[in-house]
Image (cartoon, rainbow, N blue to C red):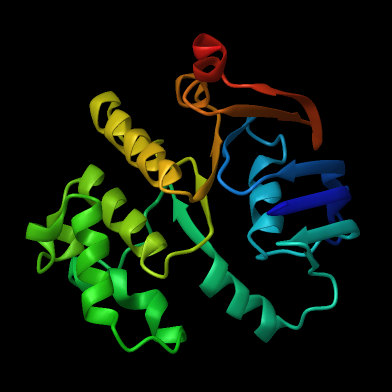
Length: 231
C-alpha cells in the first residue's frame, strides 16, 4: 500500500481562540497507481489532509505509513528527504519564482538532491508538459495555464511516486483546466499515484475514486463517475 492513514487527527490551537479540529479520526488507504480526488467545502479539512499526506505536517494522533513505513519517528531532515524523493507538490498559486526562467524553476527540487543530470531531467519534464519551447521564458511571461504546467514539470522532475495537487485548476479557465486534468491523467497512466484536492465536482468526476470529506471526517469513499461509466 502506498499511503495508509489510521485514525489520524489534527487539531490547531491558537492562544485565545477556540481549537479547530481539522482532521477527526481519518482512516484512508491509497494504492500505488490510483487517481483519487479528495472533495470537500472550504474548511472541511482537505488541505490539512494533503499536508499530512505530504509530510508537511504531523498528525496529533493516529498512524501514517508511507510505502509501508511509519513516519512517526522520522526527523525533520528525514521527512524533507522523503518529500524530495517520493512526493511532488502542485499548488493553486503555482509558487514559481517570477524572475526566474521556466527551466530554472523546474530545476529547484534538484538543488536538494544528489542528481547530476539536472539539465536533461528538467528539459524532459518541460517537454512532458508541452513547454519545451518555453524553457527560457521567465515565469512572469507565461500565461496562467503555462505557469501551472511549469509547476507540474517541477513536481515530476524527480520522478516522484506520488503527486499531491491542491486545487490545481482553481485559477484557470475551463479549457485550460481541462488540459491540466488531462495531463494529470496521463501521468497517472504512466504509473504515478495522483491525489487531487478539489471542491470542483467536474474535476472529481475524472478520478477513479472520490473521497468526500466534511468537518474533518470522511463522509464517503466511492468510485469516480468516470470509472462508473466504464463499468
